[in-house]
Image (cartoon, rainbow, N blue to C red):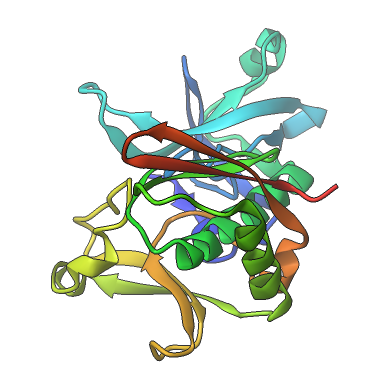
Length: 250
């Protein structure tokens, strides 16, 4: 099982870890700062620094899967191509330093937090999402038209208001007792561990709260850190789906 350090501190850029195993899909460590692809958010890239100056470029991070193809608690660090010699020199038990591409990660954190603000501005169920360093999109289950300029202005206002973000947790039972927390989500939060990670933006009471939902992704600590984002496109994907695409302001 890989200890996922990014869950409690998204600002960690590196950590020391031990190699648990090396398999066809990638390298599994006992702990990591790499976020694996999931919940619409792209996986981290970066590098592993090993013994005797060994360096392995990591192109992607994903959840490992069991023999039935189901995700496990292990995280695969997927090497970039053409590193056979470096991989052959790595052994289980070796100590490595895992470093993420921080500039890329920070863009993902900013965009992911921005999508939470967008959910506040468009309080409709979400059919799908994608968060990359270049853009983010949410597909809302709705038929009414959306105004691109109004949404961009709303995002700018929420960013400028500098709302704090808090990472918390609720029990599986509490989540079951509050179905409204998940009815708008395209990806249901994982259950079974007893605790479900939550993200809260704004105050704890309903009047001051901007967003509150289960989420396992990485986010910035304050909306001001998002910076200037714009709604670059709104598309009618189907009779009941409106896609909103976010981009960086020019």
